[in-house]
Image (cartoon, rainbow, N blue to C red):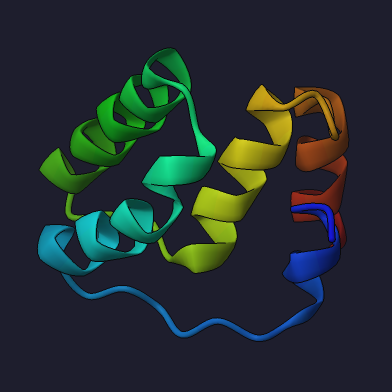
Length: 81
């Protein structure tokens, strides 16, 4: 199953950096070091503003890094919500 297909589920919001890190840890073995670090950097940057990545956000990041979706497509998805 592609990472995009997993987006069809409802995912609860994350309420802390710790929760976001736990979600990311579940996918660590599916990512190379560069991909993992890119998402970790984004997660940490967002958490400084008290914005916490939930599983959907992390799956979108993985899908983009694995070239399943472009940033333009992600923006269009966000606009449609």
